[in-house]
Image 1 (tube, rainbow, N blue to C red):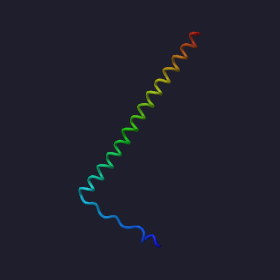
Image 2 (cartoon, rainbow, N blue to C red; image 1 turned 90 degrees about the vertical axis):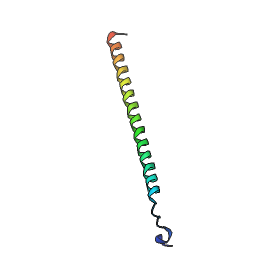
Image 3 (tube, rainbow, N blue to C red; image 1 turned 135 degrees about the vertical axis):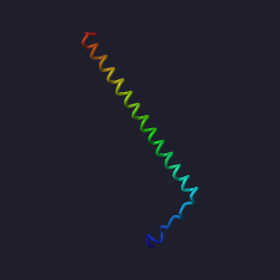
Image 4 (tube, rainbow, N blue to C red; image 1 turned 60 degrees about the vertical axis):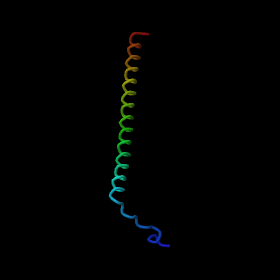
Amino acid sequence: MRIQEVIKPLKPLKPGEQRLSALKQQKQRVTDQVKAEQNRVKQRRATTKLQQSQQTLNKMKQAGV
């Protein structure tokens, strides 16, 4: 069997189906962008918290506690 015999060409989508497909793809991209931004915010918060903890620890060491 040849590859050409196995692969069937796709039918062109109707205008309504094209719009629906495009909207689904757009939704997925936006969802991915929201998740990425949420992860960046979490990372920023964790970094800030770690820096504050290190500063507190350094102050305690300097005070001799």
